[in-house]
Image (cartoon, rainbow, N blue to C red; front, side, top):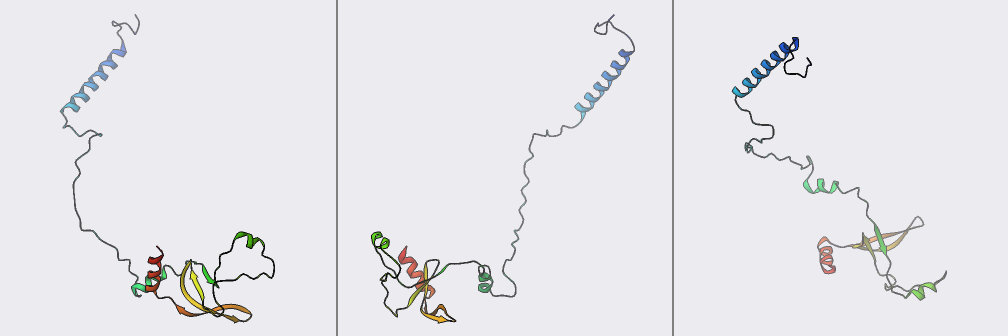
Length: 154
């Protein structure tokens, strides 16, 4: 007789009977236990509302305005001093040579514009200090005037 034959008997039959008995006991235990939710089921969320807490970001020991300006003190900006402006055609630019004079729209002795990132913030006059040119600020544009100029340009 072969092991595939239904009538095969031997020591393996006892092992199979014992295993079948264990499976039957396990299945009976599983069917009598209370049903647990399957892993794919999602339990209904429990809504709990708590009072929100906010962190105070105000600097300690300094006023609010001083604390705010400290954040931007190291940001680089472009400062430009403008002597004047003019419009000329490209053909005239190509004719420029050393010693050529370009006429500007500003008059001699007129204050120069001081611009920060392209926005007028002050006017001043040229000074020479230790053989270097500088500018002495003579008029600073007020914040309200800057806002008025910005809104006019927009």
